[in-house]
Image (cartoon, rainbow, N blue to C red):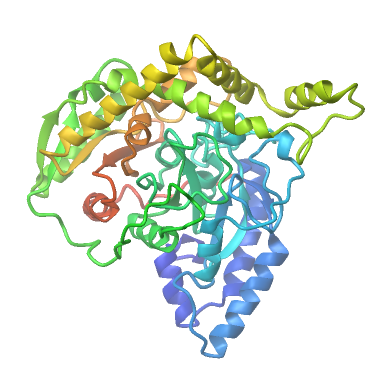
Length: 488
């Protein structure tokens, strides 16, 4: 097996036994990035010198017998909406193109404390607003499985670099499916933790009541390892929950006896691609063969979820993005006529079309006369959706279904039709509205060779259970093992 084919755990074993050095790992990874990323464009910037310097430090500490963290010498990537003192934090937006963060995000500090090596910042939809990574202000990312197709979004860069083995793992953020959807499109594992499980300190906000940081990895074990590294209470984030963080690795490979899997009947309606539906049914058959009970359930308010999400999320986005005013930091037009011109023209020129669309939608939703009719009603629907999940979990251990209605679509196919793009989130937004953890795991391929993902959801703060259920499927199949053939 080649070095780049290893999982995080396998690489850690090789590093611990000094079969390979951290510097050798980083050097090989940087060579692969130099060779393949010009086609994929998964990275916005690569911090080569810093990564090599850190590798040297870790090798030296290892040679001295120092105690090292669980990710010592492992190269990982960070979505470019998480603050890092190394390089820029642009959120793939022109308006933040030259912004250098004065501090590291909590999750970045956690990775550094675990002695991981951060390779650089990955591409994304601008301010995490999109489902294809075509809305990046610096050009789209391409899907490593078929470079004519999208990698999903908004964490498309993170998913693509893991799938293409240009990083051993990556962090993404998920506001309405932005980890799980690209994970499904790129055949990697993508986990959205419970809202509040991982600190959002240093994450540039999109929808503050929806955003959550999580890992993208080659397999479930690596996802558990990364989550264990970044999940902890943080007083600097008022939404961070002070709850015990279990050892996600401890019982990961123990099957769940008497597992009950709920399958919402609403998920298998019009709009679901036949190949996706068949792959999900076959995945459920695997669970049934392992002794699980498959139970049809109902999430009756599911049909309102997408509409509610696209009222709540843009409303929060319009508020969060008001700070980009051309005054304190970020992009500013040259020679403005006055303050009003500077503010309006800087925002008009600095934001991309999708961000402007959502700001306008959110501002309208929150305006006088429409707040009660739209935003308040959406919040009520959100509560009802959470109640639907609470009721479902009274009878089942997890809820299973598709991640996306279709496999990855072609670049440019839907970019001019926002509603068509929004429909790609139809199965994922419910988990964000309800605040529950959800994971996407590879479960097959279409006839065209495009990946398909299975989504699993459990009760809040039961990521240990969720990971065990995901691992049950993974250990019985090999869908997670194939890797794309890259074009240089």
